[in-house]
Image (cartoon, rainbow, N blue to C red; front, side, top):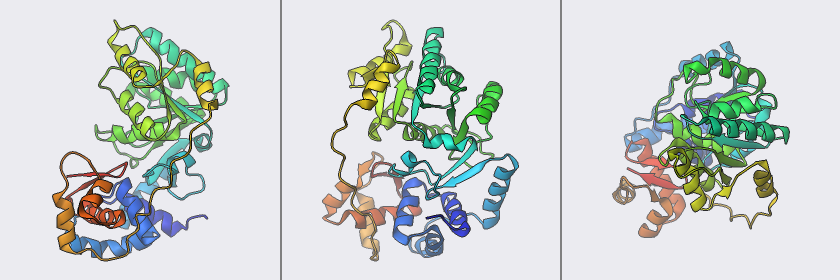
Length: 357
């Protein structure tokens, strides 16, 4: 079903509301059935919980839409027919995406190639060659437009189609020296971002960017990466999303090989060439997991329940199922309480059914 213009506008406005991230967005949409009704209900939730989650005025959203029009960007909101199916299946899915270039590439089979910013010449050659071979085999190569391995992967796949996912807006070219590469990706591939038009990338934006990189992809290939790196975060997110994780092995004398080698110890698939990737994709999968229980709760929540749920939170992320068991309550009721606590700034909702202070 095609969303109405009013619903698409409301979904963008809800997504831009302070304290409403993808988890809260999904719960509000499930609870009220539409963003229009969720925005209508938000004032009552705000008064009840003392929240600071006030939607931006319509004029702010109109300015964002106008800015997108000026640069030829396209808005995809969750529920649009062209919204990527793989991202829509995530729990939770990014509420909105801005794109520039060939948006149709997002519907094709994708493989992410990521790795170190300060990459060796050999690592860049491997990334470029893998990307070229993946493209020739019909895959769209996804990466993050960063220095090193990311740039090499985009270069290798330009002729067949590549997707660059950014932390800032789709008009935020970072690093600046990739302006020419960015222009070629827009021309031959697609640039994607969850951030508003004009937003400049901040450190907090890169985990969200990495989640989209893995979410779009059937698998993630890590070429070079140190132990503490964004590439390993992308690999972890890919594993959590049920994607295949591939690692290109390297010399133990090179610190950039420590990340891929550690992934191999943890069960990642050895990748010495495209044959390893294709073989993994043709292997039969196990049984799919059962569907998640509904988190729609229709009843009212008293202050006492909110305080009992809040008392079980800590800075360490806690599964909402665990909170529900501790209180002997339905998961849907606990999810509704966590939503109201998050609107009040007293909890943070995280992917995977987690919550923290």
